[in-house]
Image (cartoon, rainbow, N blue to C red):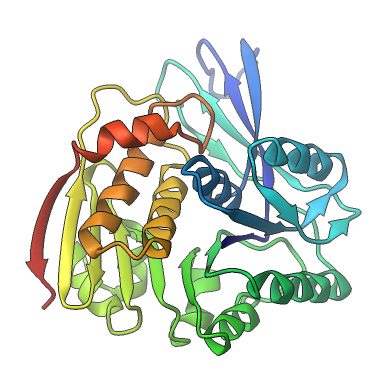
Length: 306
């Protein structure tokens, strides 16, 4: 089983405009709602790939109840504290102008110390049957920046593997914990490493992580494992939305790791999952049939880690 940890789930909404008027009155032409948050996308993608997955999050108010029901219908088991405060809402503009794919991210609830301790207790129970843990995204208010640290230490103590995909704020406290894998986009990686070249970023991060994935949007993925860097990319003719593609790529990395694939196979699966998300309207989700079709189209280049 793969355990996806999503401390800050959200209701994600596509807001449709014929045209967005800056500083003026705007009327929606439609809206669609999806269960969201990076770890939610990871979990639903893993389930779509046919693997057993559990999702740990904080579930608040009517938003939380709605998300649990929707996520459960996708074959994902949800766990975690029920909290009084509502989960956040996040919005993505869908327009025919420069504002297309503009994102507005909600702040989320404030978590009490008792709720955080229960979250950790739930994690310890779920970790007993998990092979891999994936830590994704931000935390709600009320918790310290090092809140991933106790769980990552538990993974290490259990001699299991984990992958983390989060911002600098939550990543810095765990950089030296020996966590197995990391996924960063190019801009995040530049901030962490101080390097502008993706292979140099991989080389820097490989001193701390056994698997390093640096993504650069449509330019593809640099994945390092051992002394090898695999560059993987696939070209798409039509892109509906890239929102959530990085999370879907993380899911592919986790599944590849769980099935004990080699670096090339892991890179191909990750890129195919990220690309497949671009072909589907539902935010942060894909069809396995699209992944299967894209796998043979992923182009691979290998080099030695310097």
